[in-house]
Image (cartoon, rainbow, N blue to C red; front, side, top):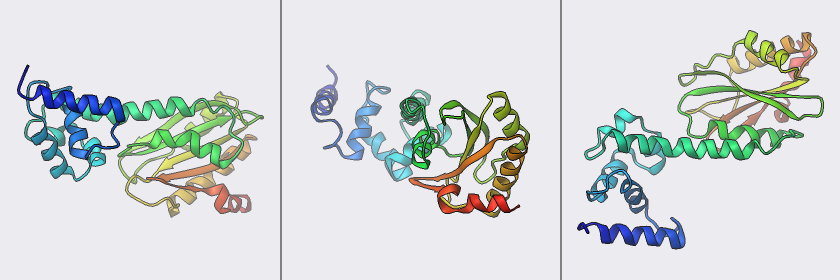
Length: 229
């Protein structure tokens, strides 16, 4: 048994008994690192990561290159740390997919929120609904750098028509901003609203996610303005 095995075993047992509720961020990270660095004291590495990035959230948001710049972190550990938030998002997306009918703005928020968890880039999603507001398909429309996502009008129409949607919900995120619409968001929403209307499809809502906040065009009344164009 190695010099650190006893300490590591105690951390594992504590986690299995009570979860992470009694753990400091450093010890929680230390326990996780032990699965990619089995023969080394991971406490200094955990300290190094938190000193460099400031929080567990920022550690998981860091790129592979940034993580590998911390002493003791190699490619395998960097992949493990990058994998954690992606697994969490995948799990949340799978859970949200159990909601098959979108009958309210809150339903739409609950369904789409997981797609934006831990996203560093701007992402645009589109939800196609049938006449009973049942989910037909959820599609990624585009992905870009922060504040530079581009929603292709032609792709929106093609996706809606291909899936025989009666209504659609658009959503995108502001990773480093606020959950409110910009002039560009407003212009895009109005253009898509009118384009969909010409083929008999309604825009149910356009949601903008920013951290824990969500802006709804429908709830704010901003979607109503599109009818006056």
